[in-house]
Length: 102
Image (cartoon, rainbow, N blue to C red):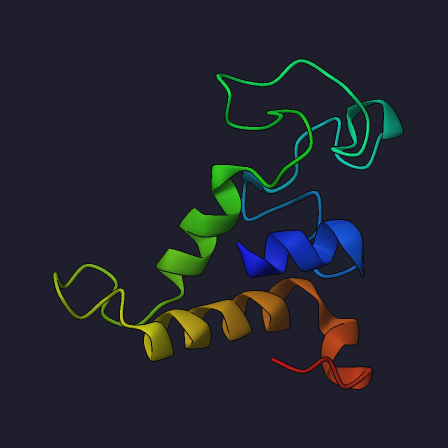
């Protein structure tokens, strides 16, 4: 979630639109008409469906997390962080060159 937030508000180079046959960003991502700062219809009172990251981001990170299928281990914070680092290294090569801090 933090990667999605940082990608939306700070640096739109972190998460690409798609990858590995998955959609990562909604088609309305970054369009000001859907920005949370402006009034708009909410999606089931949970925010706006049109501006965020799609489930493909989390699926890809989970797939890159060691022991992801092992209950009680696969979602350990350190392992998920490692999966997120692998995601960034795979899709955001400029991150390593520009010193992106994990």
